[in-house]
Structures are given as structure tokens and as C-alpha cells.
Image 1 (tube, helix red, strand yellow):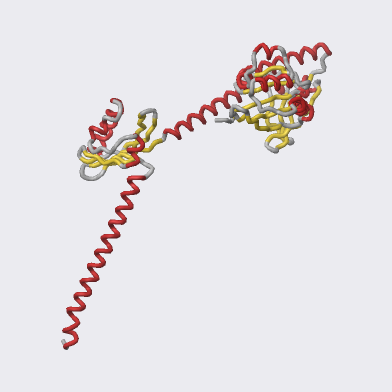
Image 2 (tube, rainbow, N blue to C red; image 1 turned 90 degrees about the vertical axis):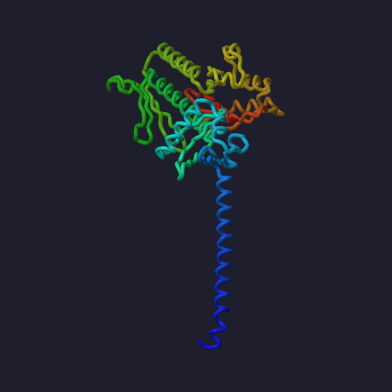
Length: 347
């Protein structure tokens, strides 16, 4: 080994040791930074965390905010937060979790809120409970189920009314028949003797045709049939669980459902007098359920004029002074009559 090698050996060793120490320091800082990030994620994540070891526990901030509590460190104090039934359930599931390492998922009801709790076993007599608040989503699901139930009942009611019509009727799209009531199944001789009427209409930009058969009765029989059909329409509107009202071609109120009368605060005696559409607008304005109009007489005339020109369903929104938003469908019906179908969209 020459003189230069002898001098450089200690220097190289010192530099190498310095690099190793620096690398260790940098790596330690990075590990600490990563651990800090992970810790913050666990503390502030969207899911509540309860970590248990030998009856000692650690809870994250999310869980404390969920239950509106301060941090705690004892398992028995944690159990005291819940009802006896929930305590028994948690103790039983966590006992199995520690002994048999069997994970579980349970629904916990606490203070009018709903939690999904998932338990997972860990090493050295530890386990973790993950808490997720599903109260809002459950409420939304329940609300949608209620809506579906109402719609299903309405569908059944309309199907029943359709089947009880005293004349054959069917709906077509082009040449394809989509629906027909039971009366269409009559013998061919009876059907051929009828006068058939076709009424085109649109829904969701698609064209359909309603076709029904009328018997060639005497004028007295026809009047009787009209009365029977009119009574059927009245009974149908009165029993519908939605807010619906039927006006004839002259703008006279024929009948309305109970939800419609409740929505517009209509008195039963007033309804029985068979008022016209202008009277309806007068009552609604008097009760403060519609915004004031400068020329109210002209407004009523304009609104009434829509009846004669209505050839297809018209959709409008009414913004009431009390904050309600009403979605209204104006539907042309038989013999120039009009159906008003109102739905409260405020909630």
C-alpha cells in the first residue's frame, strides 16, 4: 500500500459512515412523516375507529364526533354509552372476535341513529371496531320505499278502474298493441257492432293511440251510459290517493280527490256546489295561496282559455307565497274535460 492509499483510507471510511448516518436520518424522518400522515388519516377519516387491547381502547376523532363524546380509554366506559341490549350484543360479538377470530357486521341503533359496525380481530388479543353512520342513507331508502308503495297503489287503482270500464278499449304504439282491458275479449260479433273511436296522444315524445268502442244505443241509453261513465270518473278521482281534480269542457268542477281539497284548502260544501275554474282561482287567492296579480280578471280569463286549446299534457310549476312548489300537469281528458294533477315538490 503506497502513501496515498494510506492517507485516503480513513477519509473514505469517514465519508462512508457519514453518508450512512445521513441516509438513516432521512429515512427515519420519512418514516415518521408517513406514520404521521397515516395517523391523521385514521383520526379524521369518514369511518369511526375503536381499537381495543386488554380492555384498553383508543378511539379516533371521527367516532367521538359521531357520538358527541370526549375521548376515552376504558372498554367498560365505552360500553356504558349504549343500552343494555346493545351492550350485550357488543360484548358477545367481541368475545367471539377475540377467542375465535370471527369477524362480524352488525346494525346498531343508538340515539335515533343507525350505525353499521364491523369487527375485525388483530394480533396479541386486540380487535378493531369500524363504525359507519348510515342514518341519512337509511332515511332516504325508507322515503323512496314509501314513494314506491304509493306509486304501486296508484298503479293498481288505475288498472282496476281501467278494467271496470263498461266498453272495450286498448292502447297501441304504431301497429303494436300495448294494453287492452277485459272488454276487448268479447265475441267478434259484439265488437263488430260497435262504433270505434281513436284518440292519439303523446307521452315522453312517443306517440300512442287510445282506441275504444261505443255501442249504437238510443239517446236515452247513451245518456245513461254517459252518466255511468261520469259517475265512474267521479268515484275514481275521489278515491285516488294523489292530488287530482276534474273539470268539464265548460270549466265546471266535476269532482276532486281529498288530497287536492286539502292542498288548496277547499271546503266540502263549496266543492258540492260545482263551482267553475274562475271560482277556484278566486278561493285560492282569498286564502293567500297564490301570488297577487295586477289584472286578476284578465289572468283568470287567460287561465280558463287554456282549457279549449289544450291538446296534450301541459307541465307547469306554481310557486306559492307559503314557500310550496307545486308541480302541475294539465291533462286533456274525454269530451274536452281537463284533469289537474298537482304534486307538492317542496320537500
